[in-house]
Image (cartoon, rainbow, N blue to C red):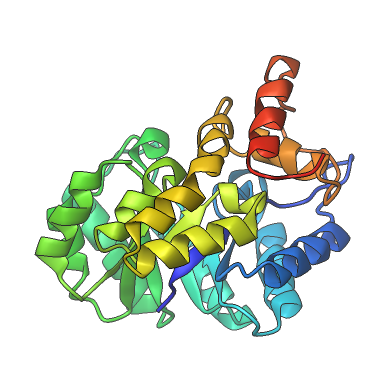
Length: 292
């Protein structure tokens, strides 16, 4: 349903911590103009963990309004509480999101059966298309391919964002799920290979900085042009790596602010990018063709 470069959008904030909706408008226009294929609102990169439910819904609603149907909007609505995930997913559908992205329940370490029942419960309660999101490095739980295959039988579970960086997972998921699910990379550094193996797109942090370059690279990979995709991806490798020198979204928010698109603010417990990393992130931006 959603293909190509899908930006995991940062959430602009004022110095007092309130959401900067004017900054959000600038970001949406920046991405539409630069060919981003879809926008994820309120994902990990959007600091969903530090916004309360009212703010979360406000950001989803305003993003849908600003996009105005020009590209799909996928709303991050995952939680480690099944009831909260259901409520946020219902809210996303009500504000007009095209789909929802639901991270695996973090911290409480559910079993594979618990993961299955969690996603099944949300999908049955809310009819909107839903994309699973597996990122064990953050959640301390791994949604295994066999569980994904069970979930693929639920009609409105349409995809999975697989952020392990393990390319063998792509092959395993394709063999188990076939055409039932679209597979999306959640790891910029391996996204090109992921798509060449059969993935449908990349939910990207790097795309916050170089949306047109990520669109072009993803288009080449989806077309099966491995040589062109590698050529386009080469200058982006520094961003793929250095945007994770500290916890995401610390480096990427610093970089977007450096571009003059947002104010340089982030919410506790996250803090501003350490000065020791400024040159490394800045150099990666220059290597990718960003004028500073």
